[in-house]
Structures are given as C-alpha cells and as structure tokens.
Length: 374
Ligand SMILES: Cc1ncc(COP(=O)(O)O)c(C=O)c1O
Image 1 (cartoon, rainbow, N blue to C red):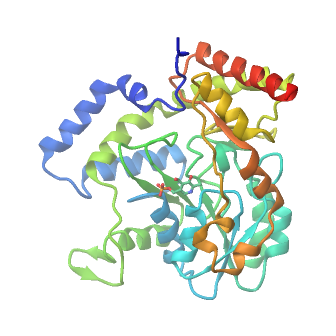
Image 2 (image 1 turned 180 degrees about the horizontal axis):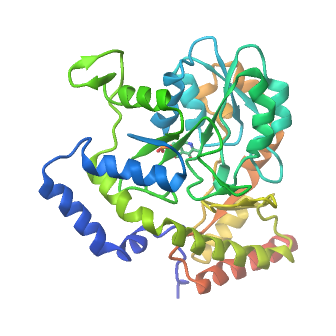
C-alpha cells in the first residue's frame, strides 16, 4: 500500500476553510462591474498598510514589479550599484538589472541565511545607491545593523519582504524597517492571491505617489502621462481575495509556527541541521529549510514515504544562465553555494496536522539513520 501523501503545501484545503467568504468576495466584484483600480484595491491598500504599520501601500502586478518600480521611482538606474544577497530568489537581482543598475552580491550569514551586514559594509562604494535585504524563508534580516552601516552614506534600504508577511524584528514588523518594502502575493506566499499580485509599503509620500503613477502608465490623471510608466496593477478580483484572506494571516502564521516548533524540537536532539533563528525575531516560517550533504538522496527517500519536499533554490542567481555573460558569474559566495547544494524545504502549511508533521519527522529521522549507515 502506498503511504498517505504529505503535500508540500495544500492551498486548496486552505481555501476550502474560507470558501464561502471567497465566493462572496468574487461575486461582489463580478456583480460590481468594475475590475481594475477600484474600491477593492483602495480598501486592500488601506487594510494592508494598517496591518503592515506603514502610511502607504501601493499595490502592483507582482513582487518583481514591486521591487523594479521602487528602484525606478527612486531614480536608480545605469551606473548605480545595488547590494543584494547571493541567497535569494532571482527576482531580487532581476529587478536591479531591469532598471539598468548593477547587482553587487554579498554572502549571507551561515546561521540565519540573511544578508551579512559586515559584508555589506565592505561592498559599499561611491556608486552604491541601495541595499536590498531579503527576509529569506521568513527570517528577518538584521535591519538595525544594516541601517547603521548604510545611512551615513545616504544609501536607501529596500526590504524584499516577499517571504515575510507577519515576520517581526525586535518588536517591529518586517515591511516597516527600511525606506520601502516590496511584497509578493504569489499564491504560495504566507498571504497569497489566486494569481499574481504585489505591493510596496512605505512612509514616504513622494515615493508612494511616484509608484501610483508608474504602475499606471505614468499617469496620475486619466490620459495625462507625466512619465513613461508601466501597466502593473493588482486587479479587483485579487484585491477582494486578499481582503478576505488578510484577517486570517495572523492565525495562519501561528499554525505555521506550531509546526516549525514541532520540527525544531524533534531535530534539536537528532543529527539534522535545522534553521538557525536569531533570538530577537519572530520568524514567519514561509519555508522550513533543513540542510544536508545528502540532500538529494534524502529528498528521494522522503518522496518514497509520500512526503513532498522542494529545494529553495537549487541554483543561486550568480550561477544562472541569466548572469552567465556577466562578471557576476565568477563571484564566489561560499555560504550561498553550500546552501544551494544542501537545502531541503520540508512540508509546511497552516492546514497541516501535527500527525502529518510527525510523519515528516519520523521519515526525516529514519532517512538520516539509513543515510548514515550508507
Ligand atoms: C524573495 C523574493 N523576491 C521576489 C519575489 C518575486 O515575487 P513575484 O513572484 O510575485 O514576482 C519572490 C517570489 O517569488 C521572492 O521569493
């Protein structure tokens, strides 16, 4: 008999729990007859800004655009350098390249896997305009250290908060810790739409106004275009879905934390390298990533037990074909490269049961034992 499957992330069952409310939200938009930049977007922007703790939220089409348009709105482009972590989803780098600036990668801390402030200090030059810290897997970056390093140089801090909905750093929410924060609402994120979506949160009035124009053909007044903008808007349907899901985010994150705690307790006494968490943060647990030299064998064995795992990310940006023609491809980033070779993301979702978590734990431990025997 094949073992009962433990899915990596079960979005359908998450949505089943709030199905009637989602149906009502979708019907509201359908019946309202207004589908782009309307009341749902306006309300979601107010509600998300309030929950994030910022003056403004400007929604856009996706997380990559949230990063790219923020860089454009700040006037960052050709000849400028933006410091990025080596370990991230490639979107962080692509945004910098898209505006014509140069990504300057530095390595991440080997424990928290977030950008190493000491290396940021070393990478600063007279051309550095911004640093893009990524709260990788939902673990907040050391933002106070980064601020102390960059602010004397007038360098902007833009949080990549795509994986950090609900994460907290020293009592302050991620998304309020830099000059602006870029969010993704890709379906599998802690707060996800039923398609693509993104947003920028900031306390900077001028930046928010500029983003509102850039996302809408460079226009603040219909058919008046002060600049060459894009079309990157969250649609009303996605905004209505996100408004329905936002009130559940805190509870869903608590459920993630309970599973992560179960994993932590089980792996602490075993020979499994679990995630390192700083003492002064509340992790959002977008992903629970263990590291093993035998990662591929482990993934295959877990699959035999019906446990679905993924790798975030098997190839770091500087080793991707997208950067093969650049000097960046020759950079050596030891922690990032080691992470790509060893990282394995275990199943983690708010609808996961403790029984499922225990099955993952048993399989990981038995796998560790059999791999050790060789
Ligand atoms: C760290 C990080 N940055 C940026 C993005 C880009 O977001 P999106 O997929 O919405 O474009 C993602 C998500 O995929 C991400 O994980």
